[in-house]
Length: 213
Ligand SMILES: Nc1ncnc2c1ncn2[C@@H]1O[C@H](COP(=O)(O)OP(=O)(O)OP(=O)(O)O)[C@@H](O)[C@H]1O
Ligand SMILES: [Mg+2]
Image (cartoon, rainbow, N blue to C red; front, side):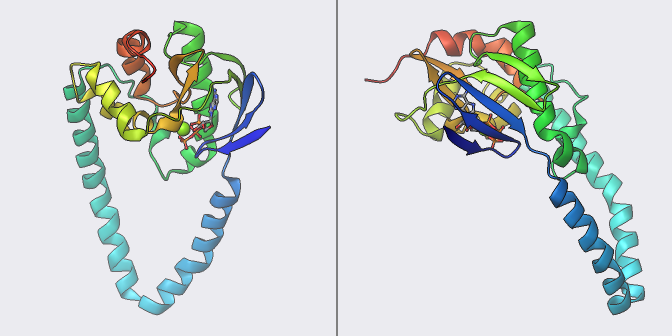
């Protein structure tokens, strides 16, 4: 049995199936909390008034930065011409929510998306234990392409070239795709933007694929 460690799941690869176990970063959260507990008093003693002035500045800037970021995302999503669900706030990186829930939500979404759509381009997810653990069909590793080539293949098969940026990280990483009986399929489809993308293009990406000679 082989094991792969993704950023949100630990994947155990068996003969015909893979088991995807959600990673929960309890230790990192605790470590951050403990560090800041010792770190902040040290800064206050060292910097005195300076420390409080800086904190006030950061606090007053944060809403503006968040708003700018929100507006940027909305504009990008408008250009993508897809209905991307706005509810999955846990996907904001670096938050405690994603450290705790990222793997569970990705697993849960893969199971729900496959069950509801039976999208041909996704590797079938057979079972989910509340997102803590998923059982997915095993695929074969792709050796003839790299990240750039899968990214090109995706672009060649769609008209709106903004759309793959709904999750450029996932769609430009060859390890997120596998071969299943000669067919190309995606194995990592647990993110917010990828659902509408797969609903629009899954069938084309599945049908147009040919193994390079
Ligand atoms: N169905 C599958 N068949 C074969 N290998 C798989 C399958 N699912 C996942 N893997 C392997 O496990 C790795 C990690 O899985 P996955 O990408 O789903 O986890 P992740 O935590 O979302 O990863 P990351 O966020 O780092 O991309 C994949 O890159 C792939 O190599
Ligand atoms: Mg992955």
